[in-house]
Picture (spheres, rainbow over the protein chains, first blue to last red):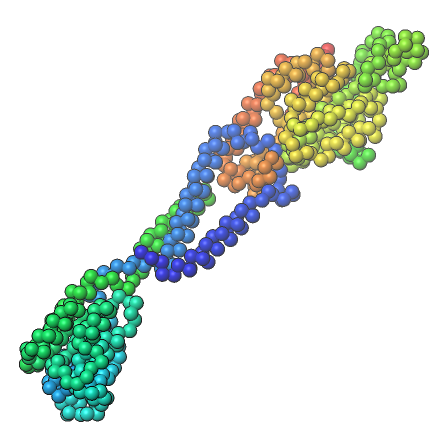
Length: 319
Length: 291
């Protein structure tokens, strides 16, 4: 429970203070000549009827004061927007997924499959953000984390097409380093793609590579994984088939809590994506969420009670 | 002489010539037989008129002596009037009570000065009580009435005034008490019994405006004690009005019994136009009571 527009309380407080001051100041002795002077009213005050009338009047005045207090409290809650931090929906859409694709020749099939799956998935996503980084000997960010799903789908479909056409134009910039499939550098680049470090979001990297490192990398795989562990990023790896290098990769990826999938055909890719999805969802349930929903009920109930009290008291006092 | 002129004018307005003559007559008959006191000399006491001093006798005796005959022949009307804040309140006819007090005191004082009698005054409230030395002139009376023009902020206090009279006034007087619509306490009764021995007492009470009177309609009514407006939920309550009227009647009956027991003539005034007739009735009742 928190007040979203807590600053709205300031004008309300000021208004209450001003009105109270007005009432206090207005409660001055009458001006001479403003009415007929009646002396010895204590005789009236001693009659039983007066005692009864005064007691009833005081009682209804008290009701009125309480009603106004409730009304002000209710109005304060409503205008300050009391909100509840706990989301009712277990589906929480604050995930960031960076597709981290090795675009060396051997990975083309898997890359295309992953991109295709994610392009299809983009239509169903809400709140999640997807980014795409491709790398070989150097990394290139095709697009940053975004939730513009038409753009994502478009980009991924373009990627699939370009890959199938063996277009170097699309993967330009990934051959600037020495060697190929520099997995450490690639993964490190992907780790650095996550923004909003303060927000509690589920961060996932889907690393597609065969781990056939060839050349001098700046980061080794363990160093890059270390980076991911520091930032609490889960790295899932997808490799073409189980080999010695893949096992090494699986060990490293397991340190981040991620899994390693191997596959040979496209149906495999879809299963991988599905399984990553399920796993992330489960992981998300435990995370605190930033979504807040306005709690109008308490404010409305207070305002309602206040209004009823005010009307009843006014009616009684008028009699 | 503004106040006394007003009193005289009102006397002319409110009383027929006949009644006015009667009032004069009442006053005279009230005093008949009183000038036959034995003439002698007695020691001077503070408050005696210096004119009454018998200088030759004083010289012979070596102390001040006053002529008793001369001093006693002139009567003294002592006006005992409250001037607390309750006097700022209105009578049921919407005349301020202090104006009615001035009128009544003025009529009594004026009749006395016309007979060359002394008129003195004791006035006060819960905080202080003052007295004005008895005098025979209209100017002195005018000045006395002037003390009643501005009611003070203190509460009214009849008991205090009566107590003051028992301690400070030594001569026999005809006391005219003008006060609120009081409920006489045991202390009041004790003091009045004490005073009755020395003085003739006429007791005049002034009624208060009833805030619940339906005749006031929606004219604002202010409590003279607190200066708060009296709220409508009280003023429009018929039952409260009835209970106040019942309480008033009960109190009046109680006071009437007490005054009768003490042999004091009492009258109640609810408006300016009743002053002359009430005073007339009061004097007459007193005369009958004394015969």
